[in-house]
Image (cartoon, rainbow, N blue to C red; front, side, top):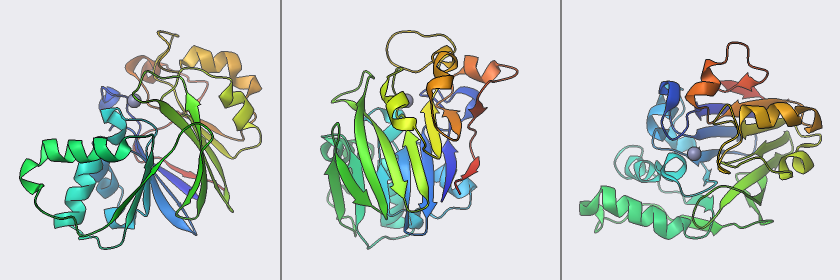
Length: 244
Ligand SMILES: [Zn+2]
C-alpha cells in the first residue's frame, strides 16, 4: 500500500503547494483522497494517469478539497476518455455541488453527456462503505463547512490510514489512531486559532497520546512550513509514503 501526496497545500497554496489531494493505491485498487483544484497537474507531475483512479473520496465541500472534480470530468470526457463508472464518496450534497461546479466552469458542456456513470455515495458520521478494495469509515470532525466535514479511516489488507480531513483538534484522533499504520493529519497553523484547523501546538501537546505508527502532517500553512526543525514529518507535493 502506498500513498502519494499530490497536494500538501492549504487553501492559499502556501509554499506553492497544490490544494489537498492524495493518491492511495494497494493491490485491490486506487483512490484519490481529496480532489483539490491541482489534481490533474499533480497526478501528471507524478507520472500517475488520471485513468488509474477507481474512486474519489472527499472530506468536505470546500474548493481546496473538491474543486478539482470538474477537471477530472473534463479529462475523462476529452483526454483519457473514461467508460467505467466512477465512485465519488463525500458528505451529503457532494453530487449536486459537484454538478453545479462543473456547470459553472463549463456551461457549454451541459448538453454533452459524460461517457461514464458516476456513483455518488453520501457519508455522515459513522458511515461505512467499500470502494477500490478499501473499507472506508467516516467520522464527523469540527470544521466550518456545509453540510459538515468528515475524517476517514481507510483499511485494506495491507494497512490502515487515518485521515483528518480539515478539522480542529478532536479527541477522535486519539481514539482512532491507536495501532494504525499512518495518520495523515492536517496542520494548517502554528498556533491554535478559531476552531477550524489543527495547529502544530495542538499536535505537540497531544503527540504522546497518538498511538499511530507514523504521523505525517499536511495542509500546511506558511508558518508551519517556516519551522526550522519540525517535530513532525511534513508532507510535500510528490512525497511517497510506503505502508508495509
Ligand atoms: Zn482545506
